[in-house]
Image (cartoon, rainbow over the protein chains, first blue to last red):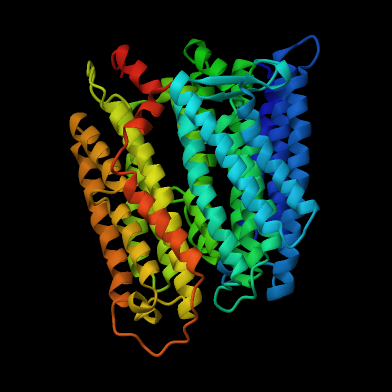
Length: 105
Length: 504
């Protein structure tokens, strides 16, 4: 049995999502956490892409693509905000980690 | 005229952009006026739903499945109205809080110039969440609520608030991405995003596994944002480090929005998956939240942390609604599921009123007594009689003593538990009330001790009065609940479900 292209993309999305989740939990550095969130976001966008293809085989479905564009806009805004907060935390406390994760270092 | 649905979202956002772009010293006043306008529109929407039943509005004339629909049924209107009532009073409180220059201990005066745009924006996003009938649009609403909420926490400018806000932001983004993953799966299955269209076709799809995966992702994502035990770790620091009106907004309104989304999706889209084990699972999680949150609240030595943990516990009550609305025994044609549902929703409203009163009272006490520690609250009853009274009344409502709104809610939920043969949830409900009593009395005990020579600063009188008003309202809604239950009947999934006979 061979996997269809769409199935491969869907599975990839699941794997990438889990990698991002792992990064979010396992890394202590705030910038790494923010990047992990972005990786999870990319996984969701990839899933939308594969769904766009699966729904209409002639040409791809534009609705998921519109959602991806909107999702990217939201992700950019959220990332900018998160990075600003991380910078501010660094300026105030001199560290780039949340207090509960500092003990393990 | 379904335009008022649109205006209840657009007006606060116009206000938000307006007060952000044009900052004058009248910003607080303008912010209050926009709050009043929003509350009036929301009240008119609620009244029309109550009188005529569900309203629909097709944005720009493009209906679902291609366009986005706004839809207000009893549940939406109930949420809109609770939000409007509590939001308006918190706006008034914020007007006096920031004007009186009441800094929380150790911090500089919170920046009210950034409070008003963020709060109005948050209110608009909340209304969007309650009215939108499109799963992706709900994602946008959830994301906007999260971003505005995080922004509101950091306006105090304290280091603690930055750390709490960062944690909240990461959790909020994780939650909404998990939700979005679930939405993608739903779109793959149904080729539409409209919740009502999906609900119509939910029985016909074969992808049971996909539906369960989507349900799990959406539920976990929203649970994280609702701070349901054991995913509540971010809530107490975030809610307790914010300025008092912001704590009130977050605890009373924001966590309820994601709970509403869960209800909407569970009983609309995932009605096939609402099985008895699912309900019992959420009952157990709710029980853990009630017990864990209350015990943590009792152990706290700081007033705002205690009130924040109390929110964790009371979110648990909301989730007891789930087992009380899923048909537990076959062939049961009683309407206990609607009773349990309205009890849960009434708890949501009374908790919103009582908890905002409690957080405002805590803010006043901390500012006036100069400390956040419980043992520094000695003599509070003598020096802040109004505030202590408000705190006590809010406590009565949270404990669920008559004649408060909390009592009505608990009465209905206990009845539903007994009628459906699930007596164990009744025990949990009563035990939770007992635990609430313990931590409310811990505060009151200190309040009534002989005063220590304090650094006392007189609070702003109107702020005290508004806080007392919120507390009194949380009692007053216990006197008459018929209209609220009539409202909830419009478009409810529960009364219909019982007609079909409980399928297991």
